[in-house]
Image (tube, rainbow, N blue to C red; front, side, top):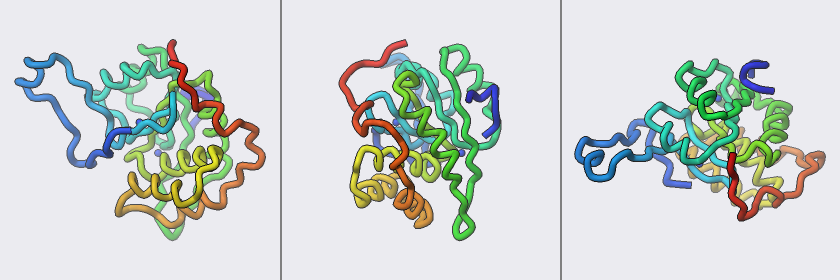
Amino acid sequence: MTLESYDGDVHTVPQSENSLPTATDSERERGGELFVPPLNFAMVDNGIFRSGFPEPVSFSFLQSLRLRSIIYLCPEPYPEVIREFAKSNGIQVFQFGIERCKEPFVNIPDEVIREALQVLLDTENHPVLIHCKSGKHRTGCLVGCVRKIQRWCLSSIFDEYQRFAASKARISDQRFMELFDISNLRHSPLSFSCSKRYTH
C-alpha cells in the first residue's frame, strides 16, 4: 500500500525540536554543502532508520542514505515538497495513518502496526526511513515492536524508547509494546541484521 493508494504520525544524538541546525555562510565556504539530519534521526538497524518529520534542509542528508522507502505514520497528507522529493529520488512512500493520541485515552491500532511491520521487515524495501511528527511515540512504538522481534529484553526496549521520548514518555506506549504479540510474525529476528550494503 503506497501513499498514492490509501490513507493512513535514523543513530546520532536526538536533537531538540526547537534547534534544527542550519549552515552558516562561513561553514558553507569552508566545507561546501552540509548534511543536516532530520529531528531525532537514528539508525535502528542496517538499512533501517528513524526520525521526526523531515524538512527540506535535510533532503541532501536523506539522499546520502539512498532510501528505497519511507514509512510515514501520520494520517495527514504529505506536503507536496516532500512528495516531490520522494518521487524524484525513486523513494516509495507507505503511509500508515496513526492518530496522535494522549493518555489516558490512547488507542494504538494493533493491525496498523502489523501492516507497517510487514513493509518494514521486507528487505526489498530497504534502506527505509520510519518517521512520524517528532519521531518519539508512533515511531517509538513501531521500533519497539521490531526490537521484540529481535528478542530484545523489555528493559532495553523501554530504555531506547525513553531516550527519544524523554520527558514525554508514555506508559501507554510501553504497555502496548509489552503486550504486542509477535508469535504470528514469521520473520527471522536477525534476517535484516547483516553487513551488506543496500543500493538502488
